[in-house]
Amino acid sequence: MSYTLIFSHSSLKEISRIKRNNPARYNKLSKLLEELMSHPRTGTGHPEPLKSGGGVTYSRRINAHDRLIYDIYDDRVEVLVLSVCGHYNDK
Image (cartoon, rainbow, N blue to C red):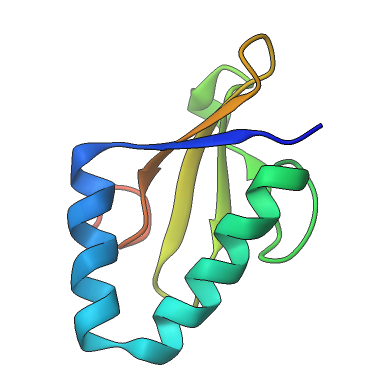
Protein backbone atom coordinates (compact mmCIF):
# COMPACT_ATOMS: atom_id res chain seq x y z
CA MET A 1 0.00 0.00 0.00
CA SER A 2 1.36 3.40 -0.95
CA TYR A 3 0.31 6.49 0.97
CA THR A 4 -0.29 9.81 -0.76
CA LEU A 5 1.64 12.73 0.69
CA ILE A 6 -0.21 15.99 1.28
CA PHE A 7 1.64 19.08 2.51
CA SER A 8 0.42 21.94 4.66
CA HIS A 9 1.11 25.41 3.30
CA SER A 10 3.66 26.09 6.05
CA SER A 11 5.51 22.81 5.43
CA LEU A 12 5.85 23.65 1.72
CA LYS A 13 7.41 26.99 2.64
CA GLU A 14 9.78 25.27 5.07
CA ILE A 15 10.81 22.66 2.48
CA SER A 16 11.46 25.36 -0.11
CA ARG A 17 13.68 27.26 2.33
CA ILE A 18 15.60 24.09 3.26
CA LYS A 19 16.11 23.24 -0.42
CA ARG A 20 17.64 26.67 -1.07
CA ASN A 21 19.77 26.94 2.06
CA ASN A 22 20.79 23.43 3.12
CA PRO A 23 21.11 20.78 0.38
CA ALA A 24 22.36 18.06 2.76
CA ARG A 25 19.35 18.46 5.06
CA TYR A 26 17.07 18.58 2.01
CA ASN A 27 18.46 15.24 0.77
CA LYS A 28 17.81 13.60 4.15
CA LEU A 29 14.30 15.08 4.25
CA SER A 30 13.59 13.79 0.74
CA LYS A 31 14.56 10.26 1.78
CA LEU A 32 12.30 10.46 4.83
CA LEU A 33 9.39 11.68 2.70
CA GLU A 34 9.88 8.78 0.27
CA GLU A 35 9.85 6.40 3.21
CA LEU A 36 6.60 7.91 4.51
CA MET A 37 4.80 6.80 1.37
CA SER A 38 5.62 3.13 2.06
CA HIS A 39 5.57 2.81 5.83
CA PRO A 40 4.81 5.94 7.86
CA ARG A 41 5.00 4.23 11.27
CA THR A 42 8.41 2.53 10.94
CA GLY A 43 11.84 3.26 9.48
CA THR A 44 14.50 5.94 9.64
CA GLY A 45 14.35 8.85 12.04
CA HIS A 46 12.88 6.98 15.02
CA PRO A 47 9.18 7.52 14.19
CA GLU A 48 7.01 7.88 17.25
CA PRO A 49 3.40 8.84 17.92
CA LEU A 50 3.02 12.16 19.71
CA LYS A 51 1.24 11.95 23.05
CA SER A 52 -1.10 14.82 22.20
CA GLY A 53 -1.73 13.60 18.64
CA GLY A 54 -4.54 11.16 19.35
CA GLY A 55 -2.69 8.29 17.69
CA VAL A 56 -2.72 10.09 14.34
CA THR A 57 0.21 12.52 14.67
CA TYR A 58 3.76 11.18 14.41
CA SER A 59 7.27 12.63 14.56
CA ARG A 60 10.59 11.60 12.97
CA ARG A 61 14.05 13.08 13.48
CA ILE A 62 15.57 14.90 10.54
CA ASN A 63 18.57 16.03 12.60
CA ALA A 64 19.31 16.99 16.22
CA HIS A 65 17.10 20.08 16.03
CA ASP A 66 14.49 19.43 13.33
CA ARG A 67 11.55 17.03 13.30
CA LEU A 68 9.22 15.89 10.56
CA ILE A 69 5.70 16.12 12.02
CA TYR A 70 2.86 14.41 10.16
CA ASP A 71 -0.63 12.93 10.50
CA ILE A 72 -1.48 9.45 9.19
CA TYR A 73 -4.97 8.80 7.80
CA ASP A 74 -5.29 5.08 7.08
CA ASP A 75 -8.91 5.34 5.94
CA ARG A 76 -7.88 7.71 3.10
CA VAL A 77 -4.35 6.23 2.71
CA GLU A 78 -2.85 9.72 3.13
CA VAL A 79 -0.08 11.32 5.13
CA LEU A 80 -0.43 15.04 5.89
CA VAL A 81 2.98 16.66 6.44
CA LEU A 82 2.50 19.41 9.03
CA SER A 83 6.03 20.66 9.74
CA VAL A 84 9.66 19.96 8.85
CA CYS A 85 11.48 22.61 10.91
CA GLY A 86 12.08 22.96 14.60
CA HIS A 87 11.39 20.62 17.46
CA TYR A 88 7.62 20.63 17.92
CA ASN A 89 6.66 24.20 18.87
CA ASP A 90 10.08 25.69 19.69
CA LYS A 91 10.76 27.34 16.33
